[in-house]
Image (cartoon, rainbow, N blue to C red):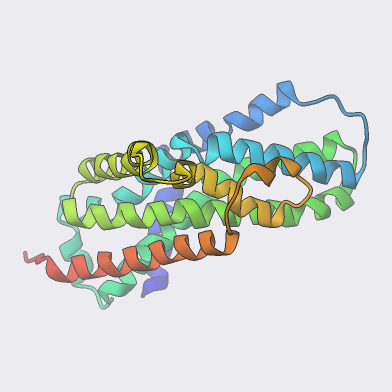
Length: 262
């Protein structure tokens, strides 16, 4: 049953107008690169890989993983459960032979799939364009494909943790708009208000974009510009995985505590 729920929810998200608008927004760094990319002085797979790591990490830290990308994720994930609760359709869903844990997991995975499309498609377009630009052919595509998957994985890990928190707040507040505002307020406070307190060392580590740089440094070894991001990638990955797990468990508990009779 969870497969049917995931399939239906994913189909609904992918055909929605909201997702298409968000996808167009996330294509902005790719469009900018089309017109402002550096002059090519060396061709081939090696030069392509270096340039790809530099450009994809720069755009990911400065745009895709910034407040703009975070807001996109919040809007998507806050709506998954809150819209069902707000419209009362959660009652119909609960009458079906499916566990509440499967509802939470299915909704979360469908949201993650939508996020993978919104961010992964621009990453792929940038990769293909750069392969053509550097005239590296299939070898260049193969060389940078691992980097593409790595960047996508980091995106899903970091922004997926934010999405899980948004789902938790959506169950508590029961309305998509309230959940989105609360999620954004929490993120803004954690990243920009709390670090201003004098007893926090290295306040930049509270910023999700900074943590993306820390994680990217583990796999993007050719991009020396990431050396300025200090931190343990393993601990950062463990933290975000823990946030996802704890948030999903609390979301499930929130569903159990609420009564949806009708």
